[in-house]
Image (cartoon, rainbow, N blue to C red; front, side, top):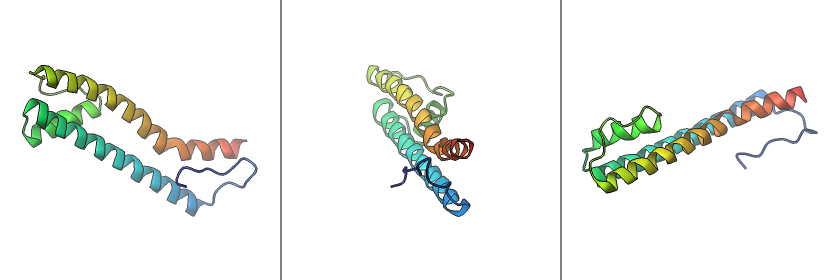
Amino acid sequence: MWFRFEHKSQPVLPWRMFRHRMAMSFLFSAATIAVSLGIGMVGYHAFENLDWIDAFLNAAMILSGMGPMAQPQSTAGKIFAGTYALFSGFVVLLVLGITFGPLLHRLLHKVH
């Protein structure tokens, strides 16, 4: 399994395997961001009739925490923008946990 860590009674993972674990975590995080960005782009394109470049810009700005560039005009667009903003906040927390989880585990494993 990707996210299975060694038990405290087991030795710490060798560097080569740890680098592989970190790379897999990074790739999974990048895929999560890409899928989330795609969801935002499709939503802005469908609900607000933004062209793909503007949909990308709005989705990227919300996903990064900066806020939207174009204010939603329709009721459906406003509901989507609010829902996507909440979703994006959870994605940021998920990505941080996935990316830095192996590093924190290794640190705690060595300290213990």
